[in-house]
Image (cartoon, rainbow, N blue to C red; front, side):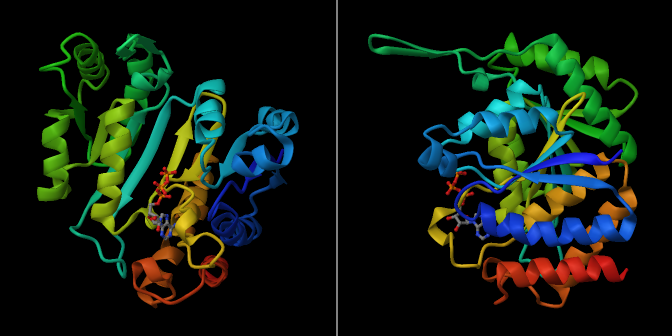
Length: 328
Ligand code: ATP
């Protein structure tokens, strides 16, 4: 049975980086004999302009039928597409590996994986305004914490068996306290440390190598992963996966970057490494590793976009990494 993958190019630089990544996906599937059934559909600002809605019904039924969604960034309507999919399919774990790569100017060496809770916290959308008072609810559940902590445990077991729980339970004693307590329980038997979110931001810049697997709540993870991506050499290199029990979605960490859209200079590596995460999720670590090696080689040889000091075009980088993957 082939894996059904819905491809959503998205907005801004999305279509450019997704096109480049598709060269790599197709070459990898060919080389490693992974059966994929790829379909493409529109969502986001581009769909809003064309059809009046950011999530056309046809896109939604294709997404419902797919095993995985592979998408580019979405612009102004990100909440109606990205957040919507996370909630609809209960993609409760957001995995963001952060690793400094050769040939990209990292601020400091870093090699960790963020496991960010993805469907709770202040992003549940429970916001209220009563006159001059605005209230947002921060929702953390034991069940939600338990399932994401289990994902962190799986990653820790594949790595150094060390997890850092990031929270702010000294101030948010009840909500962050629950997250901390349940996470501690689930991670028993591993080396576990706790770091307050403000200290974590500082430590990610001061001594990033002290982190291996980082487990945190939705909002803290949102902020810290952008910071960590910058430490690793830029947002154009940072991939992500959104994992649930029956479906997953893969996308670059960066946004639509309208400032450079249409110029063919966007870095496709974040999207290509997200494709590697998709192959890993399909149980094809061999294919995923081949893509990662090809990315490193391409950077080393200087076939890279301007944001990481090169002068290659988005598509050239995609084709080059595809060829290197296939040649292994
Ligand atoms: P959002 O609100 O959706 O996160 P944003 O414009 O605030 O969008 P990004 O789109 O992530 O944030 O971009 C921030 C900056 O980083 C952009 O100005 C862009 O120039 C640069 N950038 C982001 N992604 C890439 C990429 N893939 N290649 C090169 N530069 C990028």
